[in-house]
Figure 1 (spheres, rainbow, N blue to C red):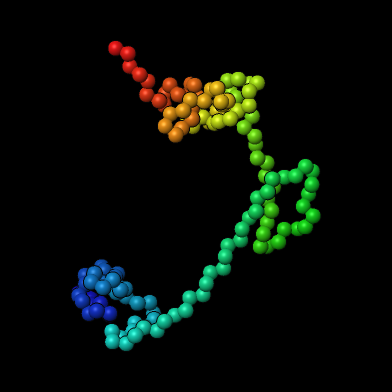
Figure 2: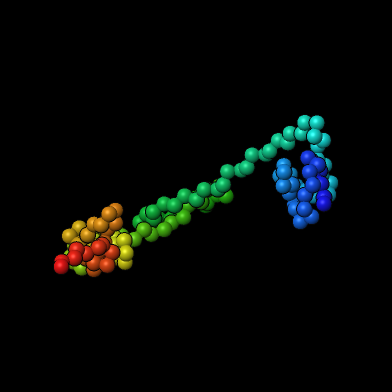
Length: 133
């Protein structure tokens, strides 16, 4: 049975880490463990570079950006769709989206159950119905 290079405990052959202290059983070539009585040499870690951030802006009417994007910040244009009109009342603007089928619905069609909003059709499936005996 191999012994741990750090604590000296016996471990099974298949062990990659010591069952007692948790240190690696087999060190990569060229690395040296410090002796148990000597303090370990501290290694300074280099801080990571912050990630590049993409800025998303809504497009302006027919205007193109005047400057070329740089490596650090980049502007991406995207169209944000409006909710449109209600799926049941085409003349009314939509205020909600059904939590089950994702239809756009107006305030009159919205049915609340717990923290969810449903259309009239999905409300019958999602919310428990009262029983009349």
